[in-house]
Length: 361
Image (tube, rainbow, N blue to C red; front, side, top):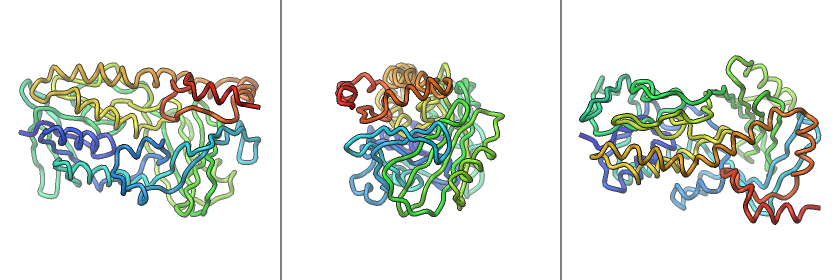
C-alpha cells in the first residue's frame, strides 16, 4: 500500500510527490500522457519558481527576463501605461521543461512517477483508496492510504470523491509565433470582458500570445482578433480551462486536492504554478498519511497562507471590468516604478511599494 497515490504529474503533483517522498512517504504519481504535454498553461512566472528546481536547471529553462508590463485599454497600437522595476520582475520559462524537471526531482527524491497511466476510477473507503489506471500493461489498481488530486481544473479525483468545483472555469487560449523578440516587457490588454489578453516575448523561443474568457464567449474569435491586430502568424496553439476561486472544500475522507484541481490560482491572472507548488509543500508538511484527520490541517493551512492573496487578487480582477474612464485614471495614477510581487497582491501594502509610490514623478 502506498502512502499516497498522486493523480497528475504537473507542477503541483510532482512537487507534492517530491516533498512527501523527502519526508519518508511511499508515493506513486500517475500522469495520463507524456509529462508536460499537452501544454495548456503559460510559462510567465515570478522569480520564486527557482526555489523549486535545482540550481543547474535555470540555464536550461530560462527563456527571457522581464522588467515590467505595458498595460493597454485598446489594441496593439494603443497607448501603453508602463509598470516596471529597475531589477528583473519575472521570467518567461520553458513550461514543458519545467514539468519534466519537477517530475525528475520527484523521482530523485524516491517517488515512483509513471507517465502513460490514464486514471479511470477512484474509490475512497474508510481504510484506503483504490485508483484504477489504464497503462502500458493494461488496467491496474493501485492502493494507497490517501489519494492526491493534482489532475487539473476538470479533476477526475474531485468528481470521484464528491468534492465541489471551483467558483468558475475560464477558457484560456495560447498561441506561439516564431518571432525572435528580446524585449523585456510583456503587454497586457484589458480588452477581454472580465479578464485580459497578453503578449510575452521569449527571445529565441518566439512570442506567446494568449487570453482567457468566460464560458460561452468566443475565445477562438477573440484570439484571432488579437494576433491579427499584431500582424503575426501562429505556429502552435493550445487551450484549456483556468479555475478561478477555490471550492468550499478541498479534502475528503482520504482525499485532497492541490493546484488547479483545488482552485489554487491567482484570480487576477489565472496563474497557478507557484500557488500549487506552495500548497503541495503545505500538504506534505501538514498531512500524516496514517492519520487522515490531518487532512483538515492541510485545508486550514493552505487557505491561511494563500487566502489573503486570493481575496485581494479577486478585487484586482474586478478592476478589469470597471468603466474605461476609471481604468484610464487608475492606470495613469499607478503607472511607473512598482514594488509589488506578482504572486503576492498583499505586497501592494509593502514598504517597497510605498517607497516606489513616493518616488514617482
